[in-house]
Length: 106
Image 1 (tube, one colour):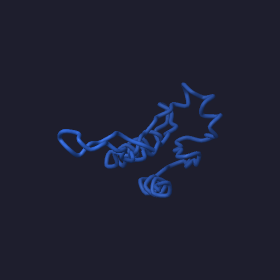
Image 2 (cartoon, helix red, strand yellow; image 1 turned 135 degrees about the horizontal axis):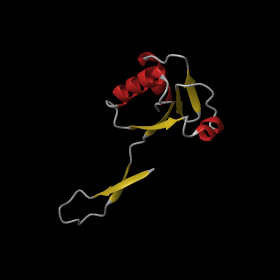
Image 3 (cartoon, one colour; image 1 turned 90 degrees about the vertical axis):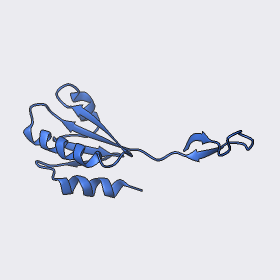
Image 4 (cartoon, one colour; image 1 turned 180 degrees about the horizontal axis):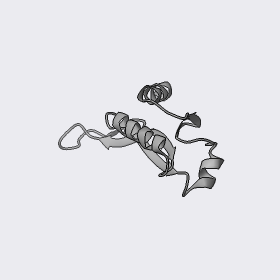
C-alpha cells in the first residue's frame, strides 16, 4: 500500500518517494438500539479504540439493516467482525474485545 509522497529537502531538489501508509483495521459492531448488552459492548469498544488511531469502527444497527447483518453472517448481537471473523456472545467483555483485536493485528 502506498501512502503520501514526502520530500525531505526544502527546495525539492531530490525526487520524492512513496512512504508506506499505516494499515487501518476495520471493525464492524453489530448492535441494536433496544439491546442493553450492545450498549455496554459499544462503550467498551469505543474506549479501547480511542487509544488506537489505526482502528476504524463501523456501527451497524441490525434493526435498520437486517439483510446486511444476515448476509454477513451475524446471527446474534452484540457481534464484532474483523476480516470476516465474528465474535459474538451474550456479553462481550473488555478482555474479549482486546483479545479479538490483538488476534487480528499483524
